[in-house]
Amino acid sequence: MSIDSTLPQTPDGVDGATLKAKIRGWGSELGFQAVAFSQPQLSAAGDNFQTWVEQNYHGEMAFMARNIDKRRTPAELVDNTRTIISVRMDYQVPAADSWQVIHSPELGFIARYALGRDYHKLMRKRLQHLADKISDTIGPFGYRAFVDSAPVLEKEIAQQAGLGWVGKHTNLLSREAGSWFFLGEIFTDLDLSPDPPGEAHCGTCSACIDICPTQAIIAPHQLDARLCISYLTIELRSSIPEHLRPLMGNRIYGCDDCQLVCPWNRFAQLSQEQDYLPRHGLDAPQLLELFAWDENTFLTNLEGSPIRRIGHECWLRNIAVALGNGPASDAVILALNEKLAHPSEMVREHVQWALARLRP
Image 1 (spheres, helix red, strand yellow):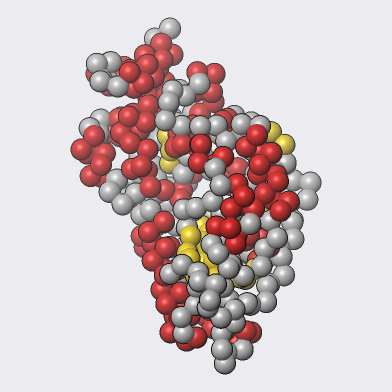
Image 2: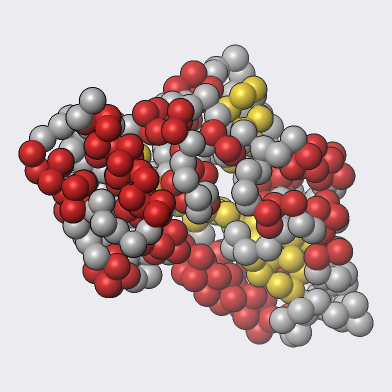
């Protein structure tokens, strides 16, 4: 439901504090580990974001450069926004040890958030249920739900709501949950008191900056996406710069190094969401098996997965780089040679690069 400025600002006959408590309880029932409220002031965050874009740190993500004013001013994105409800959903599940996978060149590493079902649809459905429960209690109200689907400065909004703080790696951190979680928002016309904002607790720690394989964290709280392995393997649709390929190792979809090394993730809890459990052995997959998937197999095996959206060509591109960074073997050379006739010029070029690395 879109927000209508003719609707009431506050729920008639319902105390704001009571309603907030009810919303938190409903959120918990729906599988959200935290629910918080803000009336965010995002001018400074919007200015920082605009500077980041002007420095071209967003790379080829053109959507980042659009609607900056809407990011800065929530009411310009959704009319009459007064209170934003922010939610946290944990996604860490039992899986193969990440560092062991990263250090096993015959395997492919996939970011832990992408091992199971795509979180977008799951969370959006839960947010709709939460909005329905509010409406059932107070009557119609204006709202719009988002899960990484609009120009929203969700991390800054979550910090102002008290869900955590933006760490030096630019991910949101929580003292109780680390960073292994998703965020979602409901923009509302309700006039509810904001929660206290989150306070930073990174201190002098620079572990995330030091560990980054491509040194994409160019300064505390400053990420050059053009260097980030998550960007290179997920958002980039063209050829991966050659000087960055050797640094990617066997990371074929995303990169978790900055989270894996973060001390606060010692406090992260396992998710109870069965949909986030690894599918098709993606927590420790054999690169050669993945490289052998044709497009139909790729689409079938990854149905409902966030990985599917990069497409089969980028999938092969990423795996070719990982194979080129591993040890040479007859099986690897044969698999790469078989892809030299692939119809995609981009795939062929990355395969040729890998072969050159393995057969100097």
